[in-house]
Length: 228
Image (tube, rainbow, N blue to C red; front, side, top):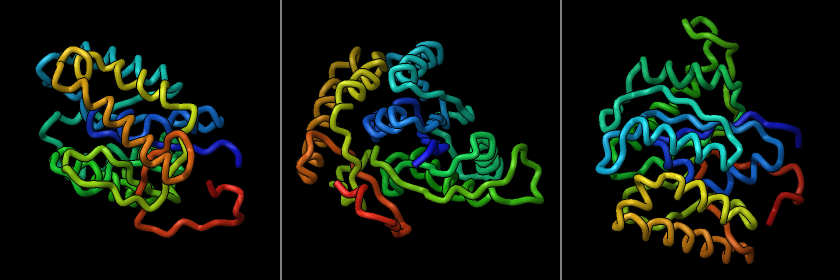
């Protein structure tokens, strides 16, 4: 498989790293062009600021070897709207994304729910020819959901990605957000239980670690080489 254009959308900086940091690191190592799209700055938070979060998110992207951009919607006020859809569709076109990742659609955080609905519709908008959007029309072939849910649900994924060898890179990318996972003591255990989850899912594959994903559309296999 050659280089693939991949877009990973997060409601806030750190959602992508928490949900699929190991997969991002693996995809980059395989030569794919991965772009992280933040819907908001993530602020306000108790220990952060726009400047701090921008520095942290840039550091996390550097650790994962990716580029990062934002559509700068207001944190905690993300709404499914035509302008929001078109903003994301423009990024899909600019990156010519063939695969898009977005948060799982069941969540307690309104920003997460709105983001996923926006991305689902932006995937459709990006292919339209008679629309006032820059870039060449494209319809991403795949839309996958990663888990960064605020609900206490147990993921029931469609597939797992073996992330063996990328656990430290994922952890480093997460703790790059010092204002979120280092300074506030109550949030420090999040990093540990994310690692525990990845080890559990790795156990389902008999690998060291793995990350869960969901798809509404069936995956097609042309051979068995990709099966873990």
